[in-house]
Length: 396
Ligand SMILES: *Cc1c(COP(=O)(O)O)cnc(C)c1O
Image (cartoon, rainbow, N blue to C red; front, side, top):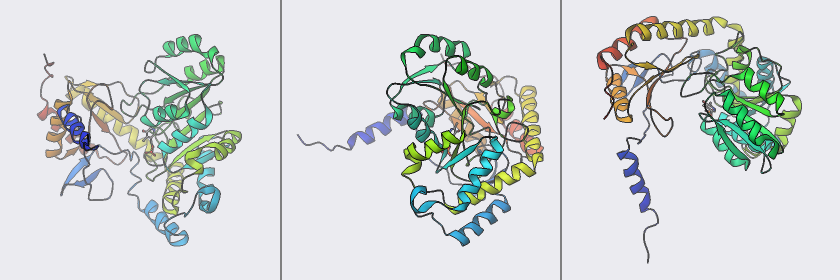
């Protein structure tokens, strides 16, 4: 009995198509920015995590070119072998200084930072309590660690407490993991309450600041600063690829934590160090975040303007609760959200449809940038209104 062991791939794709879950890439043909070229035409960009507009900034580009000329294109080895450069250390010090932590460690991506940190911190005898809407990298880090993983209801501090009361005493170490800004919803985790429970039940806390770094807090340090939790015992991670406009990830925390991760985080030890270009671009981004708070102020002005435009002009659409530049409009089905995103693109608005299995309910996910002009935001709302003029009929 010889059958082709790969035929199931096609069957699986058919199933994915039928569920309207099929995904494919779109080619961007310009520098990142508030307006980009997509499939040959200019569209207003609400699909990017480049909150401060730094990914296309000349200063980051120049820094990347200079670092490439000085140090080459690749770092040629893992950090512990031949891959470590002074630039990496400078970046780690800049991150620690922004976060007001003793030290920081730079990974090749945020995803790898979560995999490496979680798998190093907990194991078979331990417990992870995770917000049910956590990012994929937190979920997969938890699986990789071999610890028992229990999800608590989204931002539900009472459910977290219940789980702690029931389960904490059966495990050696406990790690609570949460996005700080939830990436597909835009709401915030209740960080002060989580830290207080962690203290009471002797748990470590890992907070994922991917969408908060450079965005939230007076100095742009993130959600931890926003909630005045700076200096409390916790593990912060984040990415260099969103507001910082580069590529890579980091963990920030105590000197002991970072020293431990340098010795135990496999996704840091056994992978090539960050390229000089990415490292230099991220370092320059942090300098700009420190020097130009007006960028963050402009971002929040835009968020407020769009929020009020949506509530005034599109009251028939359900705006999910948000305290960040991520604004989501809920749709009844994957099919509806895909059609709407396609119509918006035809109208010159680039904004993604987010569907199951990424999220439980379909939505249009709008990302506001500091570099959006008021006219961009008005245009978005105007096109929305002409494409979705009345409430959705629930599918019967
Ligand atoms: C984007 C993201 C990551 C992964 O960061 P990369 O550097 O892109 O790998 C991790 N966590 C959250 C919440 C994210 O949104």
